[in-house]
Length: 216
Image 1 (cartoon, rainbow, N blue to C red):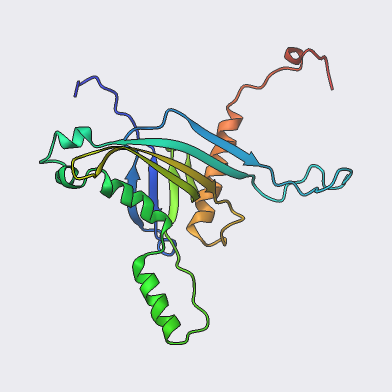
Image 2: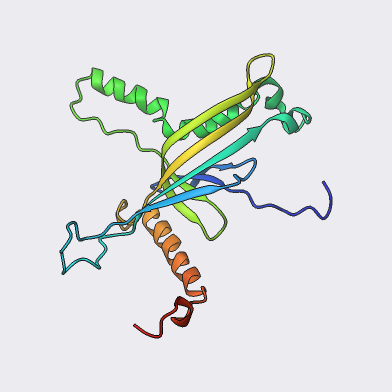
């Protein structure tokens, strides 16, 4: 690597224990996506036209949806078998499995619930997954739920292990409306929103003259 090569910060996902706040796993993107799409569903109080009392009120933060496509390639790892011993035998399967299992209940919980069901337990609590944080620079640390994942495997080794793939992620931001106040996700989301507010205050505002008007 050239000495003057930039040290590129990677985006990625961090899995956090929702009870203790301990980091369980960190998944960095091999290559940062070229684009990232964010959409916002406004949470207004007024539901009907003509609701004069609440037309300017909001009942909570917008529902933010984030979409991206990440690329994975095992070519470089295959050239360094001593550093990446699993690449030659498994290709990208470990990296893909780390992503895929985020959206699975763990197998131990499935077995436990089956045993409880067989014993006649009437109420079985659904499996709790780790809290997922989408990291896109230090200014964007966002609690999310992955709502959709697509994987396109584009090239394979002789054992049919994928060695090049694209992963599409659709994530819904989890806001203060989704957590109790004492949950780590509540504080993390509020910090994300407060960072937005600070960044917004740095934006240079336009003048009314620039809009072609003299006053309001």
